Image 1 (cartoon, rainbow, N blue to C red):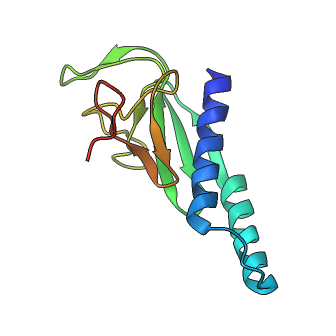
Image 2: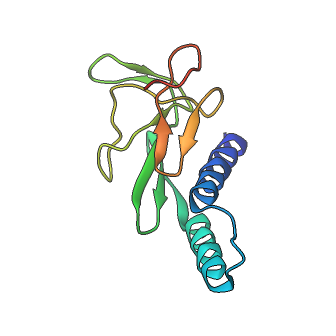
Length: 124
């Protein structure tokens, strides 16, 4: 799971880099952009809990949660190890549906994971 988690974090960092754009040749603006990318990349943290791994972003709050072991929620929704869940709050994931699985298909943005259907297509 550590390898897949590292890839997940790399995808988050890469998306933030795309969001910030490429250097323009203006040395001051490029330096600010590079510093923001570096600060964001270094600010991602992995915090392991009993049932979930919480991904946080320094100064931005919780990014997502990753399910550590298979379980069924109190509402009867089945989750599998590696499922990506949206944050409902700082200490609790939304347990309505997985947004993908780090062992399979998912699309992640620096702001959070996106819903996908059962065929791996992005849901609007």
